[in-house]
Length: 157
Ligand code: ZN
Image (cartoon, rainbow, N blue to C red):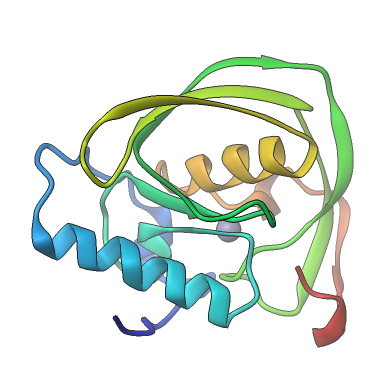
């Protein structure tokens, strides 16, 4: 396993539409392990493959309930609304207010390419929405209500 370099806003990789994973390979499994390690090391709750420069539809999330890897994820249902602070490892030192659904149901494949469904509320719903947008080349800063603000390191999510 290895820590990968997190691409920051302005990097082309963050503006691209990512490709579906058609087949699981050892290389892709290692990528998923590296993404988790990179996310934990940066104290993040989610990371998408384009954030480490790989244009594949893969995200990892851990909002405190253990690691979730989602390959080719798709949102099936959303409900409700939540408005709150959001940050991104690719936009270091900043946060902003974003309104997201409060409930999300999604479908994805795991590291064995087995299909699964996941339901999330609150932070998990927010993380799923945020990470999936990375796969289509979008950053949360496009959705911020008001100003992006500076945060101190210890406050960063
Ligand atoms: Zn992000």
